[in-house]
Image (cartoon, rainbow, N blue to C red; front, top):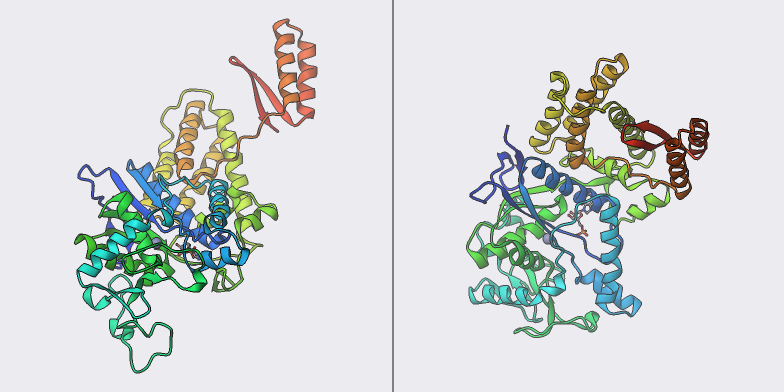
Length: 466
Ligand code: AMP
Ligand code: ZN
């Protein structure tokens, strides 16, 4: 079965075919965080899903080029830096750095590029100027520029919206009254006092870009006019992604995105986790409570991305801890048994390994894939218990686990060996060379007392945590 995804634009499962004529390279754009605060685990649900997407495509032989933007200028970042009386760049740097550290904690593969919006303002201005020239953008009385959605017939198709609902009926008492139509969205916001010293010069006076044009500019600058996959949470569909399509396609005349993928929300008591609702946990909150990055990754990644994930502290994370313990124990048993070169795994176990990957081919069906993995663990544990799994078959399963783990990244962190244990191992090497086996046994006990097991093999001593 080829890889297939549920495309938000067509609302159908579609066979995945990249633009690359060789069928190998995949251009992936993912909307990144607004760096005004620490990201919460709802945001990280989006980034973990995108990581699963990237890693599964790579497991299937694709070469993924991923770009994730950082929104480092908008109302929230400006408010944040002005409240603290610091420069915008200094304010956002703290949260950019925190974001990269958090990605690392969650074992999310870094994108090839993390463009920051403030580095692309010139390109945004050039795109807006193009839209003005084409009669698609207009300047309102306050100096701001808007996109005239009536000039883009496909507007609303991604969100499957009825545009009549966006037409004004009677007087509209909001601060967007200067727009020709309520649906028109801002491309450029004229400077006002609340912006302080955050301003760029433009042909239309000082101001700053709108959020939507930021992504259009960065995506096309780094990936070109056409990209394969664009992701974000469902809240990004409208207006953000709808606006990205309208702006980009009006500038380039080409189809911007082949496949749109959107993750459902992470919920708390049935409501979207969000900063504004105040019902959020940052990654740091959970790490402080004693949960590890891989446990949080497990809890976020193992629910199918199009299903809402109801997050509770007393269910998802303890479940993740137990499941990872089971996986660790299985991998440890396999490693212990795998002392020969890998052969083919028994057919019924090999089928479960392939079942893991084919489940993911089906719109990243992770619950199906995890079902196959746990069947594999159960059945191979039984064979190990019964003594019917040969060393070379265990080695083949261990290699299969490494392939699976390249997608999941669930393997336990390697534990650093303490210096005093290493010193005892060295001493033991010397006494063994001198054939003093009584001393060697005493040292083995001393090492065990420090929590480490030492085993002798033909390649020397092998250490593992108890
Ligand atoms: P923001 O910083 O609000 O622009 O969000 C960054 C990314 O996180 C976007 O792709 C959002 O759609 C996504 N996101 C925000 N809140 C949630 C949530 N509660 N669950 C899942 N994804 C979310
Ligand atoms: Zn975006």
